[in-house]
Length: 448
Image 1 (cartoon, rainbow, N blue to C red):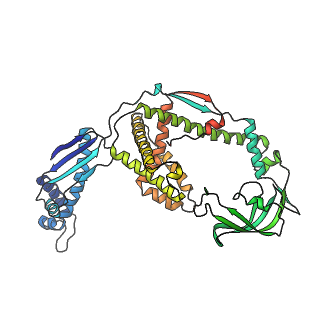
Image 2: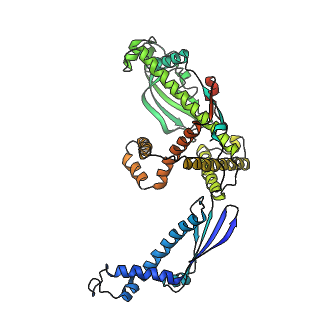
Image 3: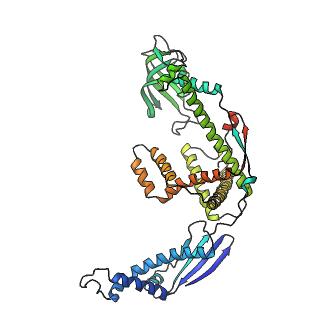
């Protein structure tokens, strides 16, 4: 076999492999000899089929198998011998001439093919101990816990039917049917719906028109869907709702006591405060984690500069771009609506793609050196969480992941990333910094 490097330019490599026809025929004949004792052919006793007859029947298919096996084996061997890591699955080029391909399968011509790939560039990983991180921390105040509990009490407030007209803060029970241009639209109908006036639950302008109504009233409520409304087909449209009021109820006293806790299945108010405080704390901790991770990734991006495999960057950009354009299309928006242009957006997302590829390579290198692995238990837990998102379709979702290695890889990647981040933070200089809730919750400008 002859292996010749035909391209070595930057990260791009191209290797020409030539396997002599004699070597291919030797392997083929060994396979056929083994097959001779196993196949059953009418007119011949087991093991007595002439090798020439076996070759006539199975020679071409066996040679086809050897071609595929040779490509896979030689590709692995080339990378191992050259001590290179392919950034993506290497591309294989063979003859497209049918007559030439037949000659190869017949064993009359050497098998030549080309392996093309980009390598993962070598780079030095930054010293973790020199990475400085400010960990934003928000203390959960008694005032915030009280506000959360007040919302819970509000949602569990009792209402008492009253005679007379509905006022702000009253609850009305209504049937409604929405129409645009005289035609009902999907999602625009409900019966027995409870609506607290002034809650801002419905479309702007809807609740205000129910103030002053009473049980038994029928009326038309005219509103305009906001331009930014989630459903594109409704956004910006004028609508008329035919409404019938069944009941008007006044709010009961807002009770924040042990009885409230007991209606929620808890022992007392102190237990409710403890749980709410824990929930708020968990929300803050999750946001803190994202801020810390963002700082870390920004630092890693700054400290590592090396050439990137063009194929990986292109694939990542295409993934991002397809998602962005699909989202815009679904929302019925353009780049101009987002205060940008397609040209500027392409440049921005190209930079984002490069950042993601660079960080992906850095984190992979760190994880490999630290021998970080995703356990089967962690993978199963992630799979379980995915399955739970599709109630009634659990079996289909599970079977999809079982038969789709790429999908399983999509579950493994974020777990691996989080474990690598934890590994780096164990060594990095992390210092807590008390911040306000607003500072902590402020969104970062650039997606990670």
